[in-house]
Length: 266
Image 1 (spheres, helix red, strand yellow):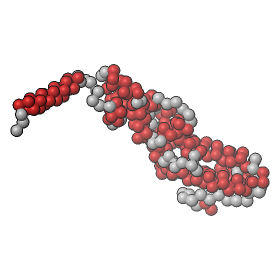
Image 2 (cartoon, one colour; image 1 turned 30 degrees about the horizontal axis):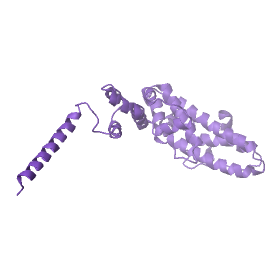
Image 3 (tube, one colour; image 1 turned 30 degrees about the vertical axis):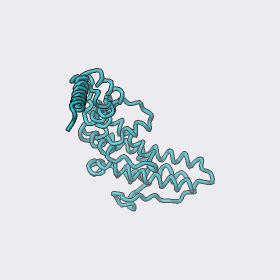
Image 4 (cartoon, helix red, strand yellow; image 1 turned 90 degrees about the horizontal axis):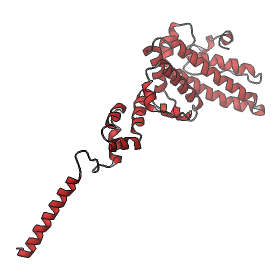
């Protein structure tokens, strides 16, 4: 049994505890975000669409400050765009482009934007072919979008493949011109790299191989890669007595008349 004095102290303590809880609850107004950390809120906002975050930013100053502090609008639009063009952020960083992702996202249905993105991704894939995984779906989606969703522009995509492969063989030629006694070693390294470039060009631009090339007089991407390599590399160095064969070719290597095709692509 408690004494009257101790019981009184106990009742007073309980009363103070309840009053303190009540005071703490009354400190927060219905719109006050103090019980939640800004970091926690920023994580929650990442599940929202960019346009929804813009609307939320207009509710009050504290929400607007959280969104600004954590750059949530930019992150949301970047995430959304990368669902269509995976690793586009990686490509833009490689070219040191300062990107406002909301503006970029709003251009995603623009044909010229898609053409620019496709060229950048193909160039990046070629430059980083020995260091990074190929972009694959980003390039495939851009090619498909240009050829199908934005009207028939397969010619543009095929000409872009020619342009980029030609740039690659010209760079190899220029490097070998300065190789001196290391010519054959440099040649072997560059040939290995170029074969990988050609294979992934073939795979990532597969829409052209399946639907465009079979219905035109154009040769396959890998056959094109072989012709250009002979024209700009092998035929320009008498010391190199070689043949380039790339696996997965869609037409028989032996039936490809390289000499006849060289004038067409140079």
